[in-house]
Length: 186
Image (cartoon, rainbow, N blue to C red; front, top):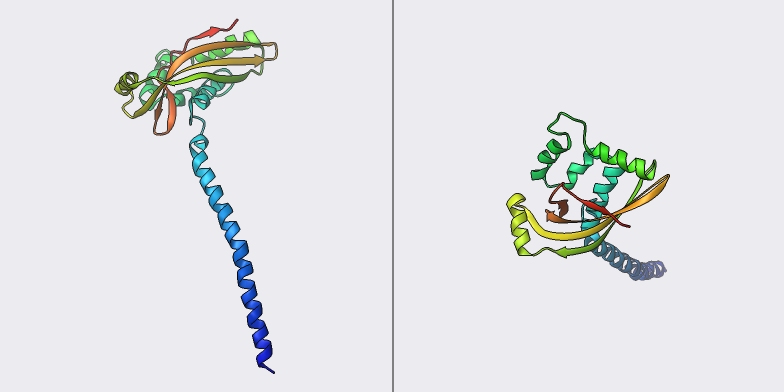
C-alpha cells in the first residue's frame, strides 16, 4: 500500500513540470521581444540630441524659454569655447542671447512655448562631410536641415524658418555653427 501514494506523488510532479514550461516559454519569448524592441529603439532614446529634430528643439527651447547655459551643449566640444567667447563678447558682457530672449518676450508675451519642426533633413554629401571633419574630426555624418521655429507666448506667436548644417559625432547630433539666421514666416 505504501507504493501507491508514492506513485501518485510522482505523477503529480511529472504533470507540474510541463505546466511550468508552458508558463516559462511564453515569458521568455516576451522578454526577448521586449529586449529586441529596446535595442532597436535605443538610438532614438539616447537623449536630447539623438536626432536633428531633438537637437534643434533643445537649442531653441533653451534659447527662448530654458537654460541658456545648455546652448553650448548643442555644439561639438571644439566649438564650445569659441561660442562662449562670442556670446559674452570675450567675457566682458552678459550673454547676448539674453537679448534675443527679451526681444522674443516683447514680441509674443511671457511664458514662451517653443515648437521646432525639421521640414527637411538631407545628407549633405561627402564633400561637406570632409569640410566638417576639418573642424570636427570625429564627425561621421553631415546633414543639411531646414526647420521652423514657432514661439507662442501670452500675447501671440511668431514663426521663423532657417537652414543649417548639423553633424553626428559619436551617435549624437550637433550644430556646426552658432550663427543661425532665421527669417520670419509671413
